[in-house]
Image 1: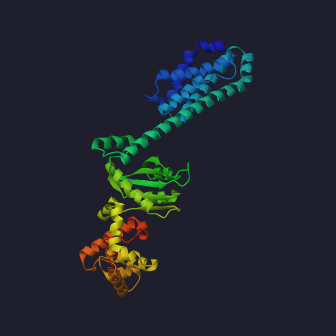
Image 2: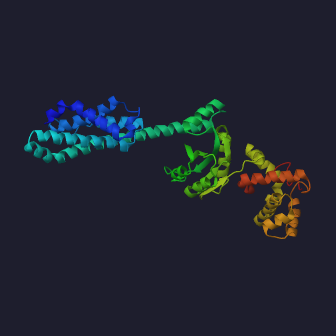
Image 3: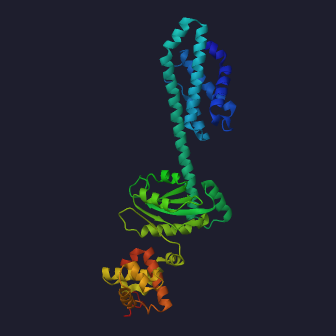
Length: 402
């Protein structure tokens, strides 16, 4: 019976290939040639025939399914389709075995049925080898793909100025548009080996948001590509919901060649959060914030010169006067509107502003003084640590007794 099937092996393999192409769309494309498909199917048939004829001995030679599994994984074939090829082929081959046994009489049929359990053991050995090989190769492929994406992200984050052609190519390889809606996220790693944003990828996939990440010591840095007309808020909600530590987020930007600059925003946003607890902060992209980010030492000196005396006040007084200053600036200089925002009387706001002027370089009627105050408050917003990191500097107004 085995010899008879061996004589018809090529016809059987051709019929199995026809069945595979008809039933599984993946094998209709150009990825797997007819010849390659037949080679894999032939290996399956020979594997079964060899052991049915008692010409094989344990351990089974699973080199053929091992090779097939690895090849299909590297070709990007879905594992379910690869295993279905085997199941279809095995069912077809079993029918051929059963039909052939009937030509040899009842005894041959009964002998085949008695050997059915052995055939299933062979089938399990074959499929296990194929699956293990596929998964190993798929894992290697995924690691290599992650490395490539990480290198592309590094080029955007760390490399020198990228010209237009390089940005277009990097965007293409990442699957991003070169011009779109992007965010840079810096997520603090709180536990070695554990992702800082577990479950984020699933949430962002549901929001049709693409990502590419690069690991660094103590954090992971990601570039997020938002759909053209999607709201930003759901992405921020997903980041908050999955954060296990501090997360800094850049402002929304439109061109990938601005990624390096926006990384600075995200890093500063993370550093400005209190350590030891999860949280998300996003900096606004304003001209004042840009100036603040340019140089931390210069920013510290400028804040000390503008607000040094105020920062030396007790916490409650300092907090009250700073909140009043922000509300007054937000109200475009209206004490009445600032009072409404602070839930107090306008005269209370005016009194606090007079106290505030005692620690400034002049009157709040002077536009230059107002501009200095706005810059200093913006600096404190970007670097809250400056509230507790001040000292008298030579040449500062309050150090000179003003």
